[in-house]
Image (tube, helix red, strand yellow):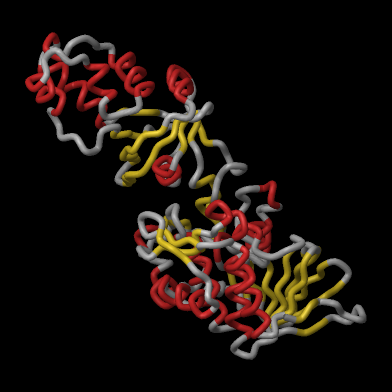
Length: 400
């Protein structure tokens, strides 16, 4: 891997300049570099792959074996099919296996390193080194221009030119790590549309009467969370601001302001289960019956909100069936999210209708590419967004 330690200020010429040394940018760089292209990879951060390093609790949930296009959100749900179909989770697994990185499946097809996320970054850097990629860190791109078929990028006190420019600077989620909307600003300058970005994979906040549920902060339960046609079964966690946990993060990507979400607190129980429980144990209390399936504090709160209590035998089947129905579809109307600071990704981004799904190149701006999170393709929680980064970076790297 060459360093961008240039002895003079003369503009350096490359085949491609990639802005952003994250997952997508590094994959694109190593792919193009190993095809013999002269590649310059730039990032304003002082080290590459910062989001990789914090992902998966430091162990990097690097892909998901269940990757499929229907697990991504986009204004064009078909856009991701080509790249995901040509560079699969199995392809990335083969790459890390070649580097001897041990890994394991956690749940729901999520793959993690046995060791550290730093192994993934080191692997990508080794692959960039094999492709003789020049990497420049610690300086933002101060100016980006295009004339006479060449892109000109000024970073720090240096300038580089290339016939191809790749936008791989991600989205504005987790700003404390230096994330910004730079990709969108640059895309708009070149005439590309941007689908309004919004926080995704993010905790939801509760207000009004629902603030009562904040008293359950720290309580978790296995639930099914629903919003529209989307549904996810995983853990939900009550917080001092509202709702979090994997099921809530998943559903947050589909939620819009003003909408409600439904929570099935007892997904393994059939309709009418409370009436059946009454016949089995008529002297059992409703509170204790719920506490047999849910954390006691949650059971208490739900019974209080239901407005019924006492022995099951003293309650009519109709009231018990109504309670069971509500517990199977408890409606919350969040008043917002915890915002970009807590969002793992953003939904929205550079509009796919201006890009080729085969190459990631802008249809009307020759030589301009956009990949990774910068694009309006957002995956589910659990390694899907990394797989999009690998696949879209590889797709662009094949044609640079």
